[in-house]
Image 1 (cartoon, rainbow, N blue to C red):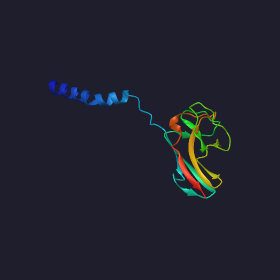
Image 2: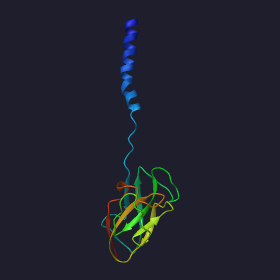
Image 3: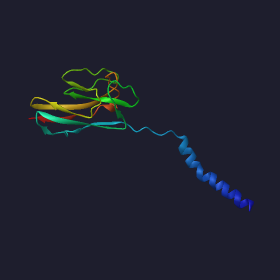
Length: 141
């Protein structure tokens, strides 16, 4: 009987070892994903159209909120984002959405444009390259 008990106890410890090791390993933080969900790349849109932002694994907050892993959206029109830590200008090519908006309406003159979404921090600075979307190209008719 004592051998059976010892064997059962040893089996319980060996079976639990992977679980204990998994709990000791810190969880990986998923990488953020930012996008412009609407309009789609290559779309033809009217002069006034809706832009819908996409964001995964980070949060959206008003510009006045300084909370880890949150930011607010900016749209860059025919320009690229600066390096991380760079202030995002407030002008006709850099539209700020400091209220925490996740969609907006844009009005642009007819032509071809490249749009990019950027998540800025509470100081309107570029957070990281991971939080700059791939560009989309649209035609405004």
